Image (cartoon, rainbow, N blue to C red; front, side):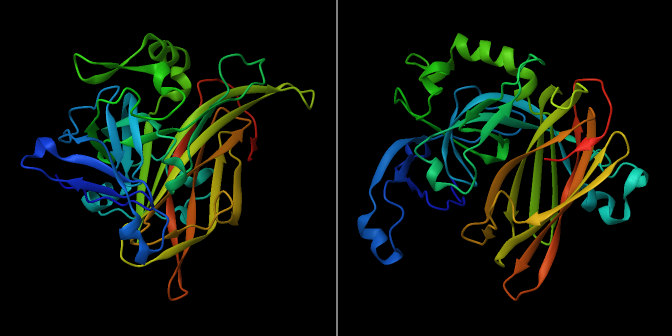
Amino acid sequence: MCCRTFLPLLRIVCESASSRDTQCVRLSLCTSLPRRTYASAVRLAEVGKFEEPKEQNLKYPTGQLFLHRIFGYRGVVLFPWLARVFDRDLAGRKEGIKIDPAQNEGAAFNNIGTGRDVKGRAVPYYQVLIDARDCPHIRAQSETVTFLGHQESSRSLYAIPGLDYISHDDVIPYSSTEKNAIMHDLFEKFLYLDTEKGSYEPKDTLRAWQDRNHPWLELSDVHRETTENIRVTVIPFYMGCRRDTGQGNGQSVYWWRYCIRLENLGEETVQLRERHWRIFSLSGTLETVRGRGVVGQEPVLSKVLPAFQYSSHVSLQAPSGHMWGTFRFEREDGSSVDVKIPPFSLESKDDDSSNITVV
């Protein structure tokens, strides 16, 4: 089995035996030593055996253990979703289109801000639990999924750490007979080891949790675009609506979370320096947001460490809007490149309209 994957601090070693069925997943337990002393100090611990990857028309089931192909962490599948992927790279290759957001501003930007001006295709995506032991060693936020819940009068914000959303191609499946193969507070609450099947199966608590929080957890659209070998993937999520009583007008505020993955597909090292967002509201207002880096960081994307992932939030005083923009990266020779952020919709399940507030 091919195990070519990018692992920043967590190294995977495939120990091949006489057949593919006996290939083992072994993880190094000591990974932060200098290169010259690493080989003699590393210890390997077997955590399971690799399985044959599934084709995209065959979803991985709830309870599937996996290694993340890009970030290298161990995880387990909670729910499979069938997402609509709007891939502007595929559209550009097939149709020869070139889209410049700078030429589409204000209310006359037509369809550029929706992300729907390219044809979507159905791709399996998964909500997963991340093994807490691997969180300190990956170049992605230990995702805290946030949502506002059901009651509009409640001011509670729900946060669930150690969750991620991954594509079918991110999954390197493996099996294990450990009772608690993944270290996460929700693992034992949601899953159990069926010794007869040799697999992890969902408990009733997982089904109840999904039924209750389905509107805030479900993934629907994924947007992707590549500029000069730097790929940006965006996944927006609607968090909920709250009525703002602080100013006395009782205006509704709609919240979204968006997850962004940055990947360097080329050989040259680049560093993220600036972000430039354009946010368009249903009322016709266009806002600009500029700043250094993202979430307080200016990540370097190299051949060895090619990816970075983070999440942020935006609120509107309108039930829908659109976002797009650019990330400015600096090359090793000091030159810069503006990498397009694919346009995507912010859609709610509520009906109201007003002005925009960016957070």
